[in-house]
Each structure stands twice: as structure tokens, then as C-alpha cells.
Length: 120
Image (cartoon, rainbow, N blue to C red; front, side, top):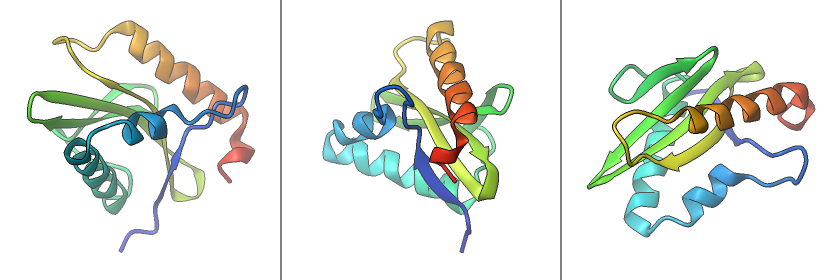
């Protein structure tokens, strides 16, 4: 059993947890698949090889959940005290991940690092 835990990035300005909101707004089957992959990530101590995950930039990785025709993506990083922070999520509709989506994840990462007390 893994000692790792999963936390949702919480915006320090407005307190929103957009990854959690994204998951809660999915239909039952998609939600179950996404949650299964998050648990798989936790069970593997925050690291999965391709095709389940891939490196994006710096410490940020992308959890890749393909289900039916949907391609869910969740950016995350492994933080202190064996904590996985889910930073940003979106439904991928193009072949290449847009720089805009990556920028959102980087901004959330910087906010999480600068407000690390929220996750400790």
C-alpha cells in the first residue's frame, strides 16, 4: 500500500479547486475512469511511465486518461511529504497540448509552491 496522498490544487486567491470541479462535472463513467487513474498514480508513488503519464516541464507531469473518445489530461507534480498535487485538468481536443494549458499548470504550480502551507 502506498503512503502517497493526492490533493487538489487550491487557488490561493479564490480558494477554488478547479481539478476537483472538473472531475465532479463528468458523467459517471468518465468520472470513474479518471478517479481510477488518479488512484493508480497514487498507488505508484506519483510516477507512471508512458502511455499513462508524461513529462511536461520542470516537475510537472501529465496524467493521460483516454476513455472512449475523450482524452482527459491532468497536470500534476509530486510534492513534499509524499503528496501528489493535481494542478490543472482539461479535455484534450487537439493533437498537441496547447501552450495555454501548460501555462495554466505552471502558474498553478508556482502558486502551490509559494503557498505550500496549504498542502502540508
